[in-house]
Length: 164
Ligand code: RP5
Image (cartoon, rainbow, N blue to C red; front, top):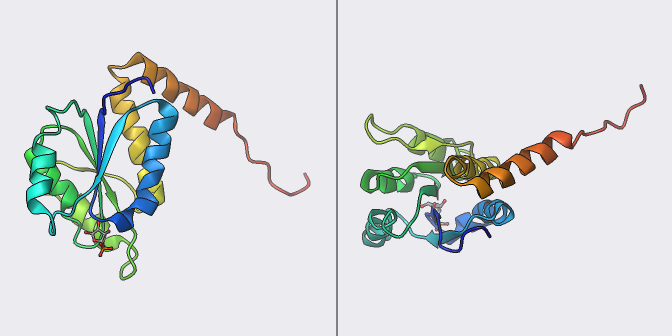
């Protein structure tokens, strides 16, 4: 890690979101970005969510990644009480496949933005990379790690199992 104090705050509405959100942690680990991660629900733990979000900046957090499913209020509730950029990851759900989560997170009222990513694991991956890109603006080590990631992704060419 290039930093030891957490600079990305990850919050998710339930432990059941962890299977998806652990992807964020893996990518941040690879890029050397320290993070903290918590499962707190906007509906079940409103007091703890408010405390976590309203103190995030003072703890040294620079970007928040917030994940939730169904009536996914958590990213918006967090964004309401912190000036930090909040990236929302809609969780895939059994009833509407995550469209419920996506609309709940994306359709914020004007004035309180949440940068909404794709549903599920792709959204988790891209939230981590977008958080890294924001941090890279003011952190050369993270910028170099992100450049290296992009270069190795670029160098990976998938060969199709067909003859020319
Ligand atoms: C949301 O409700 C969570 O983010 C989760 O995606 C969904 C279901 O939560 P559990 O009932 O599995 O705890 O708040």
